[in-house]
Every structure is written in C-alpha cells, then in structure tokens.
Length: 438
Image 1 (cartoon, rainbow, N blue to C red):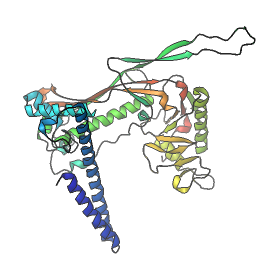
Image 2 (image 1 turned 30 degrees about the horizontal axis):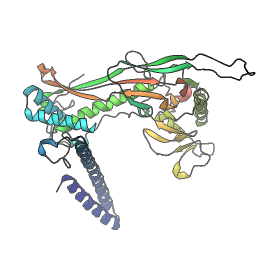
Image 3 (image 1 turned 60 degrees about the vertical axis):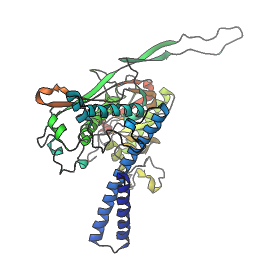
Image 4 (image 1 turned 90 degrees about the horizontal axis):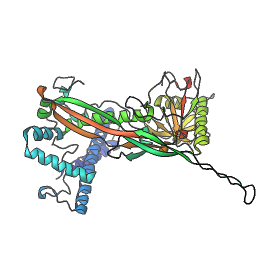
C-alpha cells in the first residue's frame, strides 16, 4: 500500500470516528474527542494534498518526457515516482551538493543531474548546532514539521502588476513611449489647411536590480541532521519568503536610488491626495479614495482597478459605525444595503478582502509607515510591468571552508516600469495615520 493510500485510509477512519462522536451524547470529554479528531483530519488532509500534488507533478513530467522523447531515469517507472528532492522526501539537495563538489560522489551527482532534468522539464550570523541558532532542528524528537516560520507579509502588490520574464543579457529595459501625440482637427473649408503636429517620443528606463541573501550553516548540521530535505526546505523557504517580501516592498515604496526599484508610491508624476485629519473617519477616507479614483480617471482616461491599503486602515473602516451604531463596512452575509464598503473575506490578512467605494480592496501589510502615515494606493495596476528573472538558489561549500561552514544563497533580478504615471494615485496625510487600537 502506498503512503497516499495509507493516509487516505487513516483519514476515512478518523472521519468515521468523528461521525460517531457527533451522533453521541454531548459532554466535555466528547467535545475534546471531537476537537482531537478534527485536528487529526485536518493534518491528514494537508499530507494528502501534498502527496497528491507530488503525484500530479510527476505525471506532468512523465507526459512532458513522452512529448520530447526523454527516457525515464534508469529504466524506472516515473509515473508514480516522487521528485528527486520533494517536500517530504528523504534526499537532501544541500547534502548532495556538498558530497558531489567535495567528494565527487557519483550517487550525489546522479541525484543532482536527475533534479536538473526535472527542472528543465517542469519549468550574517551563521547557524550552528547551538540551541537558539539552529540547534533546535537537530534532535529527532522535535516535531520539525511544525516549526514556527518567521512571520512576513506576502507579495500582494507585486502580484497585482503585470509580470513578464526578465530578458537575459541586459542591465536596463527601455520601453518606448509617446510623450506628445499627433493632432487632428476640423478643416474649415475645402482645400483649406488641416491640423498637424509632430509626434514626440521618448522612453521609460527600467534598470535591472538585484535582490539576494544567504544563510551560513555549519556543515555538521547539514551532514548529521536527520531532517535531510527538511533542513533544505526550512532554510531555502525562509530565504525565498524574505526575497518575496523585499521585492514586494520595492514594488510599493522603492526609491529608485541605491540599487532600488522605483516603486509605485515614489513614481514621478503620480496623483497625490492629501487627507488631513486628527480624527480620521470612514467618510473622510471615502472622500479621499473617491478623489484618488477621480484623479486616475481624468488623467489616465481609464478607470482605477483596485485599492491597496494596510490592514490597520481597513479594519479601522470595518470597525467604524454611523451615529446609530450601524457598521459602515458590512459583511456580505448581512445582505449589504447602501453600504460604503463590503467585507467579502472576514478576518482577511492579505490579498483581496472586499470593496470600498466600489473598488476591490487588497490588504498589504508590507506598506511601511512614512511619518506615521500608511499611504493608500489606488491605481490601474496592470499599467505597471514587473520583469522578474525568478529566484536562483546556490549552495557554496568553499566560501567559509576554513570553519566548515556552507552558505545557502538565493538571488534574483528584477526591473519595473510604471508605463503611465497618470494611472497611479496615492493618499497621504494625517488622515491615514492608523487609529489607536488598529
């Protein structure tokens, strides 16, 4: 029986037990038992989903191999075979890299080559074994699958703009633009003069920037840890999460200097609405948002697509009420009537959560306060293009070899061009300083 079938059987058994508990007499013990079974089922659902995803990826690889006539690895049947370095696999990419480079281990080289084939088809302070800096991940008794990840907001705004692959072999992308258009007009009489104006062109430069980071790890932790691929996943996933966080911050508020992208909020020529108030109100914010939408509409000649705001601003709106104590931003379950805003995802932390003044609202906790103000961005986000190379990973065993330290590194390149600054507006001022408690 496969691992997936085993988990499915365990899930069915737990579900059957749960149904029996729910049909029995209510008590504190039975309630605790119900919670335990629900937790067990949720855990099994996660494991089943991961294994099903692994099988699906393997099936895609098999189909792609068949199309390009690439033989299966070592004569093995790949249709149900997991990836070389799968999320729950026993192999460690980092360990294989070290063994291949330092010891010329042919088995390690074979695993790496196989991994590269799969990829082609599927297209500060060092850590050591001292508790407090990585040692917690060595003892096998730890529940390592449940380790607490570092908390970071996701790349909400970066996923709203248009995304293209970064072309190779360039350090700047120049997008042609028409700064002054041609002219037509009424001809006063037959054979009379007609309107004419020469077109003036220029370009928008999008310099390519680099985002990178690394973690230095004791080689003993890599070679002696029982986690195998789990250690790789823990470190690389954390590095890549911070890479996304840094990229999103650049898309929002990059200055365009000192190697940074020029973010939406700092783009030259965008509309600015200043909302000044010592006691901000939903009505005041609503007016400022409407003014920003108007700024985009009358200058860009196309409508704004969405609003991006910090959770503190959004939930101050959700928590506000009118003079009769009625909420101004209401959940969809209440059958909204004459509401200024609607909550479609109660308790949402990031991404789409509802609407305000008719536009979709996206929460992005990556917005950084400027003079205590949390700016709101209203834009036709698809106007802006983000060019990404994708994140590259490396393992460098030689950099700190004198101390038996290996370096886990991620890096990537990005460029960004706001093609129409008229399609962006921001709201600043004392009115977007978060209300106390939010």
